[in-house]
Image (cartoon, rainbow, N blue to C red):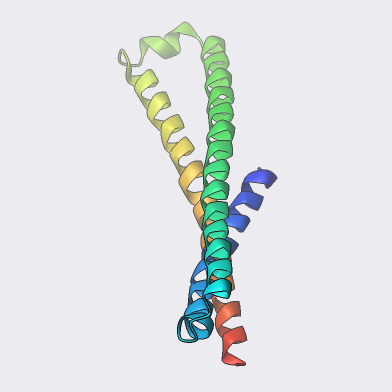
Length: 140
């Protein structure tokens, strides 16, 4: 999970760095027609966006693996718990009601873990990074 959070941090930082580099390039190199240095910045910018894409992909890939493992463990533990229940418990429930609830609840928990945890971390980093960049740029 720490590697996933690291990938989210790299993706967020490179996502913030890209627009800054575009603005810097336009301000310093477009008007001056410095093509050699402009080409260097274009290559740097391409590298930044490639790193952002790669870190986003790797973070999502790793998170999916973690979630699949978590869901597997939850389903295994729940299945073991069902085996410990009395037969009378199952006699009082409608056919398929338990499996439907279990499946829906585990899937909802999985979606919540996938969407919420990473999104909260990413949004917090993005807001903090944007505020830091704006305060830093205000100095100039």
